[in-house]
Amino acid sequence: MELIGAGRDADVFALGNGRVLRRYRQGGDVAPEVEMMRHVAAQGFAVPFVFEGCGADLVLERVDGPTMLASLIAGEMEPSAAGRMLADLANALHSIPALESMVPFERVIHLDLHPDNVILGEHGPILIDWRNSTDGPPCLDNALTAVIIAQAVLSGMVPGFDDAARQVLHAFLDAVDHPVGEHLGEAIAMRRNNMTMSAFEVAVLDDAPAFIASVV
Image (cartoon, rainbow, N blue to C red; front, side, top):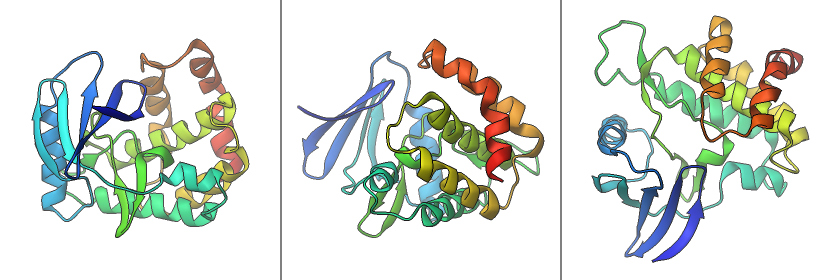
């Protein structure tokens, strides 16, 4: 199989016939991810079609196109437009009823919605990487997006993204239906517990609230 992508915890292989295999390196069970992706797809939200999932393997529709992050770094996408697109995705997602929760204000939340997880497909943006998705408060989801973007700038882990990131984040926060509010601390705590983070990436989280406040 041809390796065509690699993230922090998974590799993506081309299978041919418009399919890819997403395989988690540390194992796990993709069943909850499959269930959530099919749930949001049934509501008209744009995700790759799920062919099958078993154990740590997920067979998905191959979606061609650059990521939003790649387009921003290449100067092919205007940062404010990208921020509004992220907000549109968040707002649409947060209109979808929770999969299991009966708490009235909870909706589907992605918990990893950021420019590198949005593919600019032929027919519009496609949100990928649903492993962290669950039911919960939309404000938390938006707060985590803000923290991830802030962390990318503060750590310098995405060269060429810093200037655009500020504009993306400003436009995103201005357009989301659910402000980050009191969930910022919880989002930072969740990010600290991400075992794929380096010590330096975790350390810069201390400065994330001030950074986010500076772009509002």
